[in-house]
Amino acid sequence: MPIILTGFMGVGKTTVGRTLAEDLAVPFVDMDTYIEEQEGKSISDIFAEGGESLFRQIELGVLKKLLQNPELENAVISTGGGVVETAECRQLLKDQDQVFYMQDVFETSWRRISRHNPAKAQRPLVKVNTRKDMLAKYNRRIPLYLESATHTLDVQQSNAYQTAKTIQRYL
Ligand code: S3P
Image (cartoon, rainbow, N blue to C red; front, side):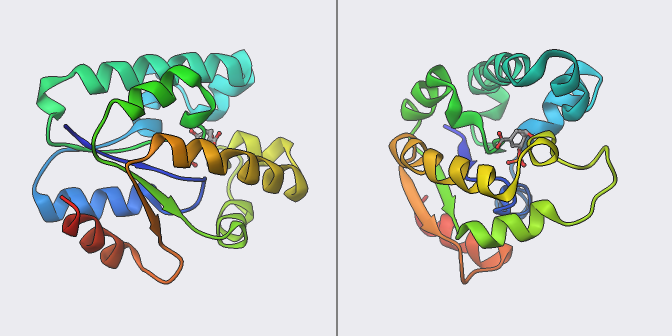
């Protein structure tokens, strides 16, 4: 089964995923990038055209597809931070045996996701929500990440390289 990384926006899932996949010499899939390639448009454009609900539908379809792909049996998959919003996605994650929830304090995520970015690179949810809204989202999602993960990693004091090494100890 693949190694799956979950956690809030800006926690470092993509960087850790890429590092880990390189270490293990296995394929790496970043779900947001996969969605953009499949749809031929940016995440922001998907949100602009069909709202969060369209994005969640696409995200569920992609998660199903990736988990069924035999070529990704040993891959590392980094998910989008909101994958746990969808009950069906949570169920798919619960059926997996290597789901690592990367946990950090809200402040670190917020610092990363709120810094000035070109409009296209900015996460759509950050554009339309205040810091307070994002903190509420962070808190509301904690139990959802916990229930769908097999391992919870406190990554507060670790860089991507160290986190990738920690994950390897659990494999
Ligand atoms: C989202 C997180 C994003 C992306 C989309 C929605 C979320 O992924 O999937 O903007 O709801 O938390 P990252 O966690 O990679 O930023």
